[in-house]
Amino acid sequence: MIKTENVCKDFGDLKVLKNISLTVEQGEVLCIIGPSGAGKSTYLRSLNRLEKITEGSIYIEDKLLEQREKGVRINKVTSKERADILLEVGMVFQRFNLFPHKTVLENVMIAPMNVKKVSKAEAEETAKDLLKKVGLEDKMDAYPSKLSGGQQQRVAIARALAMKPKIMLFDEPTSALDPELVGEVLNVMKKLAEDGMTMLVVTHEMGFAKEVADRVVFMYQGEIEEIGTPEQIFTNPKSERTKQFLNKVL
Image (cartoon, rainbow, N blue to C red; front, side, top):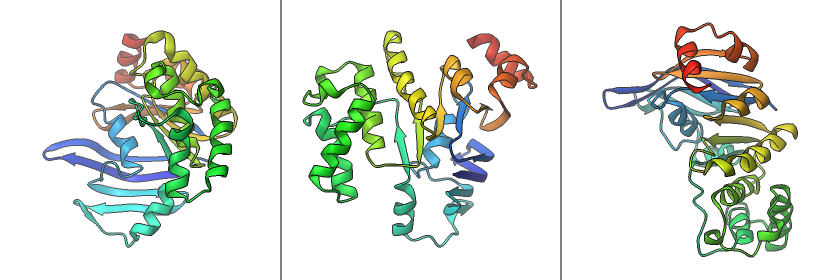
């Protein structure tokens, strides 16, 4: 579903990503962990072109999305083809970024209607189903300012799912939440995993990674330091740097 080959990202002289090669299979849940500044979020954002890579190749569902050398794009993908590929990828951010002047229901309906030209009736039916799925059917007519952070993040997940993506990217979706609200968002993500959604999750929630991930990637200083099953990473890490990190966070 996702394949990257030798992906690099430079900000001036700062090398944030160094030759990241990774494959995510259909239905797989892959969690990326590591210290701040390891390049985790930059890698995730490069997958939907929020960050433009400096070098390397990105494939979504075996379709070439981006290929660059020394910052110059060398693939011949048209903007229309890129847009179609990216419709298969949903993303949930640390911040919820809901439209404050629209109700919860309207927030979930707006993208399918404007981007996919779905009818209002179909968009509303889908939005109601998704809000029920994330446990917010009683908040459809509320405005974001009346919701808790956890509720707003669940709306953001429903909004991303409304575009019917095949892949979901989560960039530290619980980091902006009060600790007691984290569980409600993680429970929604667990249900998505159980339903077979392909998920790539940057997270500081080690318990979630242990329980839900098929594989865990530990990143350090812009590189993949170690990758393995949750059991291997959390109980028998090979890298000294992985051991140091886990000793601090567990």
